[in-house]
Length: 357
Image (cartoon, rainbow, N blue to C red; front, top):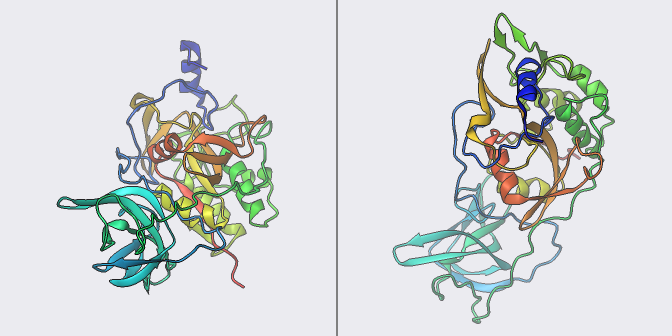
């Protein structure tokens, strides 16, 4: 709903959080420093590459000649994580995927090949994307095997993971963050309860000595009712709480490339807890407010919301939304809009590592 003058006055006095107001203020360019809600940051325009669908069982190895030695990445962009090197010579590729352009002079290619690098970086998988620019026999924007046949298109995305959906209401009208954590933990096999998590998460007062609380330190204000002031919590206090349930297994993904998170986490069967906004699209710069807190400035937005990413495909991201009682499980959203909204809210995300055998 559009914010009236009366609602605006209520927001200033009591706060909102978890998308409670549904402000009509999309398509801005303000952004937030990853993890700290501070300085303006523009999204990476090169982060257009999709990720590897590791759920595909068998792919055919097609012979290709590579030269010179090429770098293998986790997704189809040079801004993603380096997995290793594919040395020059006769190698193989499985399939091709359109992505970020690689250009040297007049030679260029948007196609990327899915292959296995032969020099693997420590702790990285061999399965990687290598730019088709490094194919020795073909021209611009071509991706063929040594027989001259086009490489097949790579399968992309995952079917949504069956993450249990949990409703934050009626008990936790501002409790989207702990409710989304409840869903993540339950999928990981942990018996978690949203009210228990709500009682355990670090908390800070809405105001103290004329300063606001910092959502990077704890949940700000009252989570249980809109009758008292409140806002929400960012990833740091949620990460600390999650680590109590999965010691040494919680991973802070804040600041990473969105497509890398999809490829490396969701495609490998792990849902991801994120901070976004309740419109799931970019917000106007004027909707962001800087709070002065005892531990430093924090930027906030009353549309702040938390959800769990459960799946994705070429144009869609699937989420569990604790605020949507009618369609909250595996809600379909535009991937590009969601990525931009997530980047604008500080690129905040956590997940967990698989259990050690």
